[in-house]
Image (cartoon, rainbow, N blue to C red; front, side):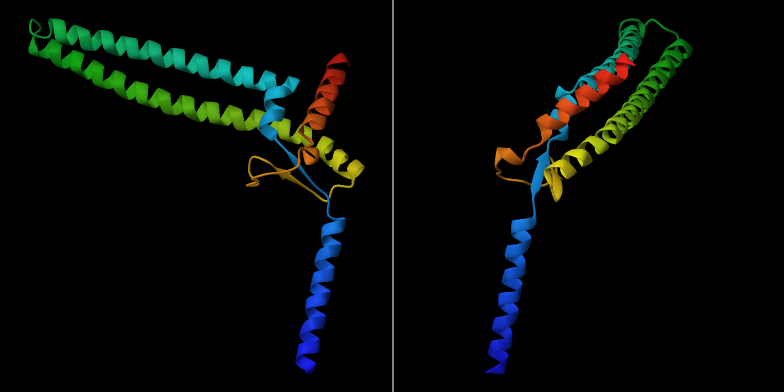
Length: 177
């Protein structure tokens, strides 16, 4: 009997604590991808990364054209070349292939580095804005909607647009100074 009463009291206590926690917890979400795509600074960063990627791709494409020219030369003139000349051209082709692979790896690393650097900068700039909104609205926790595994939600808890507005305002006021 005592065990049942004790168990009932524990269940009631836990249920009460759960209900209290539910009533006092305010949740919000933010979509960092939307902030990046729709904020002034985010658009600038995306443009900068796209230009970097385009420049790297152009360099790689130029190297591939050079490789294709060398391979075409080997196919069309290889039969008339001396063994030494053909071997030299094959070495150039192999070297060009290796250079292209190295350039691809270097480009990927550089783009990733620049992306991390620029996104880290924007994240640091957004942090005080998000914290201020959290305090103003009495929000307990803010989830990154892209990582939180949220299936469905009330759009009223999404603070993304407010963050974008305040971030744009901050960046505009800092450029006027």
